[in-house]
Amino acid sequence: MENLKPKLKEYVIGIPENVTFSILPVLRWETSKGFFNSRTISDSIKIIRNINIHLLAEKIISYINDNILEYKIRDDNLELFIMGRPWLSVDEFSLDRFTDKIGLEQVFNDEIEKKFSVWTKSFDRLDSSDKTYRLKNYLLKDVYMDRYGEPVLDKNNNLIGYKIDKNKFASVETYYNNDNLLCNKVLIRDFDDNKKLFKGAAIFSWVDIKTENGFVREYNKNKYYYDKNNKLFNS
Image 1: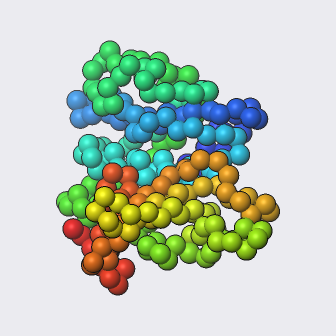
Image 2: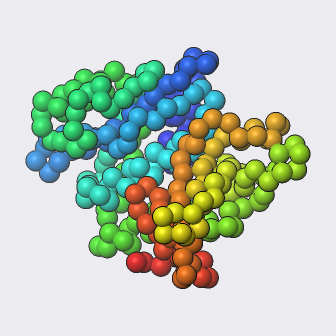
């Protein structure tokens, strides 16, 4: 991820002020037969010039890990291409999210050749167990429900969120779901430390659900289970 952040910083600095820009991350790799496959790894991500680069990089890395796992991409070398322009949407390409058809590849390749931004990284092959791989690459394993970090107060000393680490600030929305279980929707957002307020939309989010045995976290379409001692277990 450290290699990705400088590339993203170089990329976003070219975005005009007061313009909402959209980026579309695409993975590209060569198959054993010598063909190239390309797939978008997420919906388009809306960003602005002063977006938190660390959180954006973390979000993209998370999407990469999920796609490697879901589609059993085992090639060692992958290329990540960042395509973007104001309000770019995957729907503009009229493509399936995953395809190896040469005609559709060509559409991606034509855009890739414009070289908006590029970053290449070698990935380890999957562990023998998908669940083991998912847990190993789970970025939030040491963040627990109701123990998100240092309290964040507004200028009137009201609790408005938590500082998870030096780069992550979270606001929390609490509610009960249809099963009458206590839930926390945690939204990672940019935080203005001088004004003591959150700004912009959530960069990413998850939901923690309280259970009799601990809690369950729903994050990136996956579920992570914790016991009463906040120990993450493979379930």
